[in-house]
Image 1 (cartoon, rainbow, N blue to C red):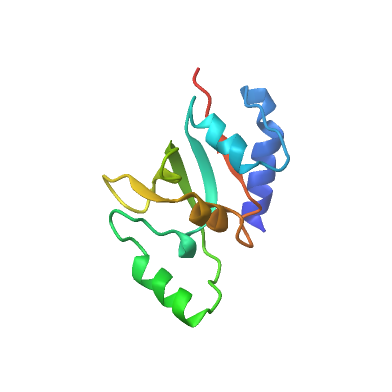
Image 2: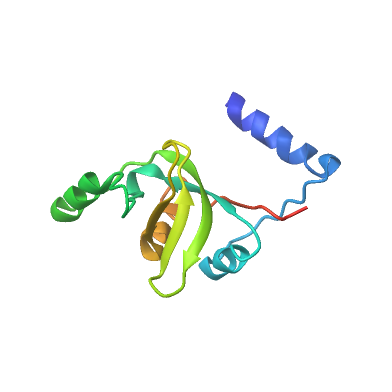
Length: 128
């Protein structure tokens, strides 16, 4: 409850600090379009993240596919920093992992960001 009060107060004070907040649904296309100008911070279900390069969370993802049990929710913010239009993969930084850029299929990102509990929270960063 304390976290909720703290977060709500920050939203209320945002305008005074020059921060524009818009509430609404964000499409995948909007996110990808924005990546051309700046990063996007997304709330995801960390249990659904899977990096194709460093194999982060890969074993548990494969295990869940085979046995079809639902992933529990554990919220985690990541920073999207790029998109490969040819392979339909997104590049992201995971603050839980140091010194690496991860990559995953766009469809996996959509599943992780739309997972129950995320409220599909997204923060678009604009250049100053």
